[in-house]
Length: 171
Image 1 (spheres, rainbow, N blue to C red):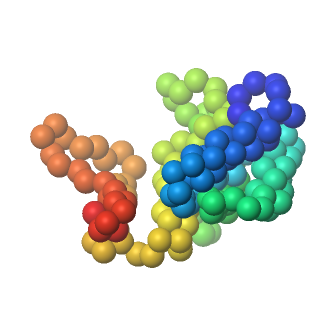
Image 2: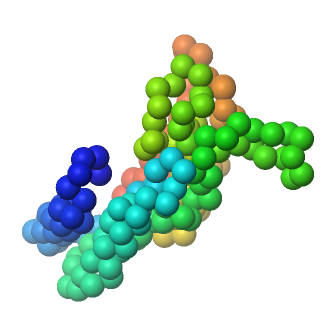
């Protein structure tokens, strides 16, 4: 979605969905596609993003005869993102956790209008996981453990990710 050719981008998404559907038909293999609305930019209110998301959602709703099932995931408004780069304020009532975008105030981070910070990425991961569970059911094992910001994995530690397998479900 980078660049200035916003009018062409929804058609590119439609082309991609057509290719996935063609593969599904040719191989007689039903598929589910999770298609996320893209997030807005730093400080929100960028109409191109919302127009793009609306056009893609309308195109998906108008598709008929597909072998694929398309689940729209609303990352733009449904993930609870704060499109600012405001710092946390524990003295606010209620306490404010800070913005979810890199923006321009984080030290050692170049000005970034487009990408969420770690907290924003965590919110998006939670939203995506919730949509997976809605569609596929809860995993057979414990859900993913989301590490608090600032934690890291040390060399030699094992950290597992659930993988969906056709025969056994989550593993």
